[in-house]
Length: 478
Image (cartoon, rainbow, N blue to C red; front, side, top):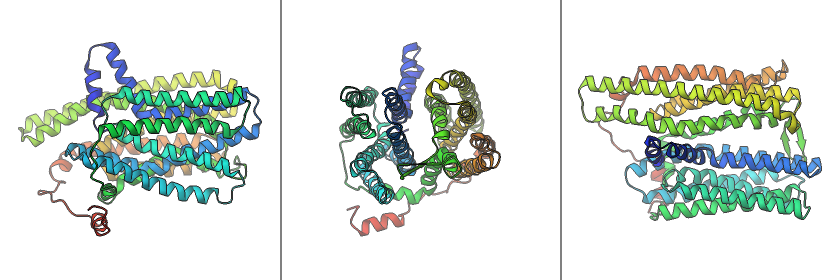
């Protein structure tokens, strides 16, 4: 993530224990801040409505609509986030920061346009009220914007502002939801969504303000970043299939015999979605650990290896740097796997003992167990994916994401539809995909000398893409 790894490295290298805790806290906010807060608020709001004995129809409507907003906003923005991340890193490295702010406006406008079309089509024949359509669409817009802004926030140095923005927005949302439902007795899904809308709007405004204060130049070439869609098309599809893979097994269940229609609008499977929802919490530590360890310790060894190559160091020094990088990578992967295994055990213990108090029956707890175990393999799979991207192996990373998306979807249809083993499909898909990821990463590491010295062009020449020619033709780059 552009700029942020350096600050993490400064914190992580300090001997002060609390400085290292700050590094973990910082990475937690950046890596999973919006996702964690969204999940936390959704869970808290659901439990609060149940505590107030809110009609089940309202609770189901809230859960279904917020789940759709959460999942499909990530799928919509996922591809753009990977492309923008590469664009942002390149422009900051080239010290062309005047292109950053304009790309943010362009990305948000494109995402909102596509999101509007999707929302209109989805809600066109829905019987829910126009008011409910509007407030859920507004939340959809806010999440789309926040997912995009989160990429640009990675370049900011003052993480206290990031924390302040997230926490203030969550506090305001929680306060409004409590006041509307608890004090005034408006126990409806609409009341909860209004609270979420206001809180997440505040988050978006504060994040946008911080970005505008940091990037003050704007060359007004709003769609220049689209040239990266043509230069690096695999990045877009990596992001798209990454999120399709995360939720593909849910979609497979939605097509099975456990599906239900909520308000004649939302197709879902609460019996399956709820335990999966809780199980995915176990993935968050892996994302945090990746930022703190691989973005700091591994990056140092990675940078040393390529610096030796660029400086024309003796072969012995290059080989030594390469083996140091391999050793660091093995150690960090092993460390992440061990910590994530501990997290998995803790989640299994907590789920078995506490999920019954949240209304889950034994079959749902079995689903939770299967998905938590699968998430351990998935966490390593995500790590391998990001390492492949570190080495610019976009084709390999794409094949890994699409392999998991397809395998988990098909395995879920087979194991749930034929054998009645809900959750096993996600587990099997993650296991086989991790094996494939191991093979891809091992192949890349074995061929790193070839890809570094032989695969690159002898003389690099920047080519004008068809996208850039089109943008110049329509006057977008003037």
